[in-house]
Length: 191
Image 1 (cartoon, rainbow, N blue to C red):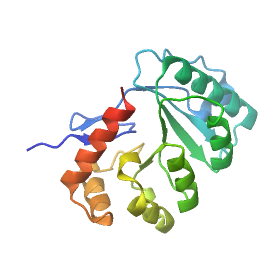
Image 2: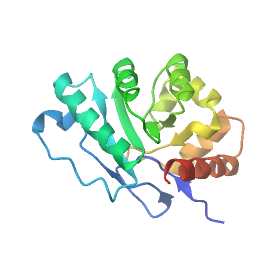
Image 3: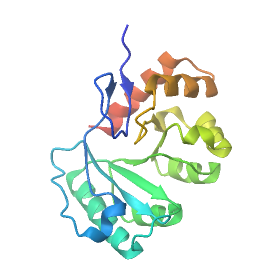
């Protein structure tokens, strides 16, 4: 039986997994003055957010982020958030909007940060890089299954099936149960 693996955030769509369509301007492009895309045909607004590890003007990143969030709020679409060394600022800005769904993708953070995101009802997505961080592995183990996703992001070598197996083992469950839970999460996030 073929499983439907959810790859919630990927730069390499494939027929062997289910991935939502996204539209957005990445925060790395914030200074380029790019026009926002048509969000109406996308499942999710983004990827958007803040990246304070890059040499990109922070004010320009915030303005771009807020434009995406306003569109997501108006269209009642979920948003996928890129957050690098900017967790506090991202959380502060997100609180200004009434969003129908928030996914913090590629999460590599602390248990305390994860708990704050979960308390707000946000989803966290984990990829192969997340598995290299001992503190994030602990977050993966303890994350509420109903707020969890897995992703390949920009890793063209990521074997999504192997990622599911690794996370299922960490969580002491079966791959089948993990797939079932993430399909349910997908249906709740993408309405």
